[in-house]
Every structure is written in structure tokens, then in C-alpha cells.
Amino acid sequence: MQDFNATQAYMRAYKSGWKTANVNGSGLLAKTSVKKQLAELKEQQKADLYVTAEDIAQGYAKQAFASLGDVIDYKVHTELVTDSDGNVLLDTNDKPIKKHVSDIYLKPSDQIDWSLVQEVHRGKDGLVVKLFDNQRAKAELMKYLKDNKADGDDVTINLIRSDRRNKDGNQRESGQSD
Image 1 (cartoon, helix red, strand yellow):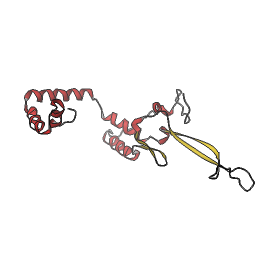
Image 2: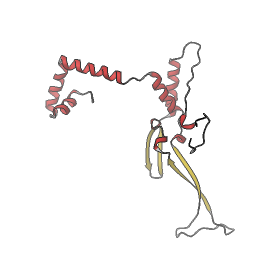
Image 3: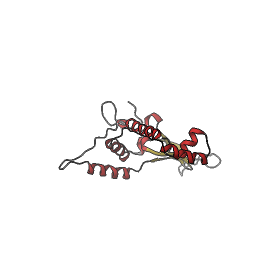
Image 4: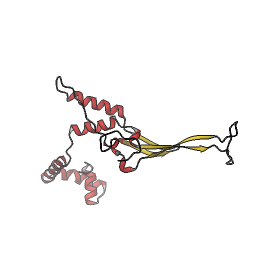
């Protein structure tokens, strides 16, 4: 049941080579008792995995309205501009030249809904965060809503963004905790 391949399953169960497993694996599938056991396991899997169309739609809704602000935070600070020797550069009025620097970082792991994140890695220029395609999620969600709309009814989705609301239900600022 793990890889849906009789040969691979036989090789794993009996520690045999491919040739033996290829012959004997398909032979096992022909046995009535094995067929019955596989059917029971598949039914048990169905019972254990109870996912509805509404669950899928909710996942698409989360992806459709996700933003990088759900995953990353940033801080801006000022630094003095220096030359290659470390000397502070001065402007025409002999005042130190300052620059604004933004530091971008991931929010703490327990504050991120990882089902929204497709990929995170460190690129040559820093952190790279890729969310799932929200345009595709919106298209799939619209298709679902269109297919499940009763005649004359308007269909709406209430998406509670608990990660962006405080206990009173008010929008909170980025970085603010409850």
C-alpha cells in the first residue's frame, strides 16, 4: 500500500531481488486472500482520510489570500556609509552619510502557517520565500464556488485570519503579539 507497486512491495517485504519480486509480487496479487486484505486496507485508508470538497476549498481560500507578510517580518535601521578602509564618508556639509538598511527575516516557525509556503531557501542575495500561486488558488476557488452555487444564491466564504487578529477580533500590526 505504500508505493502501489507489487514488485517494490515484495522486494521490501521479502528482501529479494527485482527478478524474484517481479514474478512473485504479481502472483500474490492474484490470490483471493491478498486481494481481500488490500481491499480492507483501502477501505480503512478511506475512513482514516476524510477530506471533503469544503476542506479543499478552505485550503485554496487560505492560499488565495496569503501574503508574504504572513511569513516574513522586517526591520529598518540606519547605518553610516563607509569606504573600503572603514572610514565614514561625509557629505558636502561634513555630516556623516547615512543609509537605510532593511533586514528581512522569517517569523518564528510557530507563527507561520506552513501550508501557505511552497519553498524557503537562502539565495545568493538572501532569504527567498515562495508562496503557492494565489492566482491559481483563486481560480480553483472560483470554480468550486461556481460548481456549488445554488440557483439564485450568492456564495461567500468566511475566512478567519486568526494569525492577523488579536483576541478582540481587531486587526493587529505586524510584529505585535497578543
